[in-house]
Length: 297
Image (cartoon, rainbow, N blue to C red):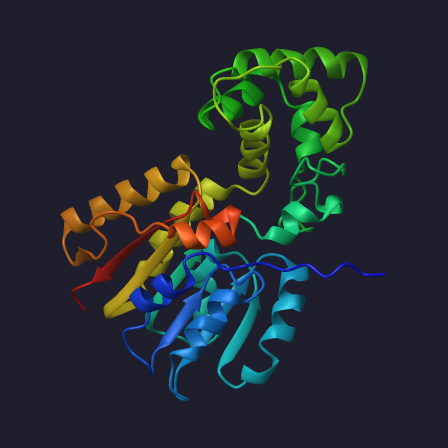
C-alpha cells in the first residue's frame, strides 16, 4: 500500500497576507512543495491573477499538480531551482511580478520518506538530494570528502563538536563504508550520550549535509538577487527560514538592500508562528518570516 504523505504549510495566513498586494498580479512560489502556500495565494487572487510555481523535485511537482488541478488556468508549474528564476520567468514570458515567496527547508515528505535519506527517524540511504538529477549525495560527502571539508560543513551549521564528529566519521569509514542514515546517526549518538542542548546530537550534522548536497545557501543568495530584477514597484519578497544560517543571510541581505535604496523592510522583526500553530505543527517551531517591499520602479 502506498503511504499518503502530507505537509502543513508554515505561517500560511501571515505569508499570504504580507505577499498579496495586487489581486490581479503575477506571483512566484519558488518552493512549491505540496502546494500549500500556492493554494493560499490563489485563494486571494482574482481570476486575472497568476502563480508561477517552481520546484526542483519531480516527486513534489506530481503531488502539487494534483492539489492544483482545479486551478490550472491560473497556475504554471515549472520544474527547476528558484535560483534560476532569471531563466525561468523569461521562458514563461513574465517581465514583472507582484511578489515572490521562498519557503526554505524541505517538505515533511522528505523527512518522513526513508528512501529520500533526509532524516534519521527511519533508516534510509545517505541521499538527501532534492533533485534526483543532482550528482552529489550525502553518501559521497561522508565517504569520499576529506576531513577538512566535512569538518567545515559541520562547523558552520552550528555544531560545536564538529571536530570530534568528523574524526568519528573519518575513522569509521576507514573500517566500514557508512551506508545508511541509521549508520551515521548511531555513530554520532553513541559518542554523545549526554548533551546540554535538547536536540538530537546528529541533527546539525544532517542539516550540514543537506545544505551542502543541495547548495542551499548559495541558491538562496542567487534566488534573492535574480528575483529582484523582475519585481515591480510595490511588489514584495517573502522568505521563510528554519535555522539561523538561512535567517542570518536573509536578514543581512535585506538590510543591505534597504541601505542601498529602493526597498523597505515590512517586517522590522521576523514573524514567528503562534503557540497554536506550533502545537498543531511541531515542524513550524523554528520558522521565521521576513518581508521586504520594492519602493522604486
